[in-house]
Image 1 (cartoon, rainbow, N blue to C red):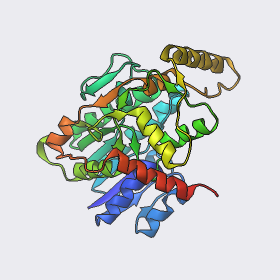
Image 2 (cartoon, rainbow, N blue to C red):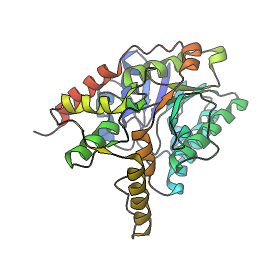
Image 3 (cartoon, helix red, strand yellow):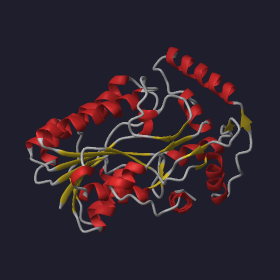
Image 4 (cartoon, helix red, strand yellow):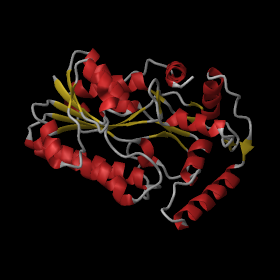
Length: 330
């Protein structure tokens, strides 16, 4: 099997491309940063650089490919809608069109549980529980991209989509690096009572889920799947576990949720008025994420993909901490 992995210079795309190579697959990778995929090329991956906004590049990437694993996209809370729509919807449309023209058999789409975010607590949320209104441009455009993916089924493309929650492990450049940076600057506080439980996903478990999508047949096709470790853990216990592993003091300062939310709203409002609309230091959505319960029901993935998360969140955190120490300058 020959697969294309988009977004391979990023964390998830890069880790899955490496995993696929280790399983003996032929792998073509795409990303904007050649240095980000150098380790994959050394392991035998074929690299084609370029911006997926270019439909011609997408066609070139999909030549002689059996399955596309589409991990590329824009992530974030702040920015113009046009930016997120271009990176998450238009790029996905280009990939779909290229798949159809090049007769690619299957498209595995990496989506996000951000489609569920409405600022409220959710426990065991199911795939169909989409809010009537999206909290941000990212969540909205990820959902629109999903709709484009599933619309391609009528033209014969086999499709699956995953919504993995808080993915971490070696190479995580998003979740814990941001928290570590905030803590170093004295800006990290426990929001609310600090007892909220959330889902995480070990990157190794996500690799297994993505690989299952490559092999899935019959009723497993044409569905979107929640992916997590399946065992919600107290968020602030996890944060302080990482801090201890990195020889940093624990986070002990508390901030009431209402106060934190109001401060974030004020921060966002000011930034909207400033020239260039600089990114706020705190967001209302971020305060809700850090204060409220949020977990996914992974029953569908267990039933149709035989998904069985084997790697605990604590093992994934150990993996991250070991990697983080190795890459930090002395």
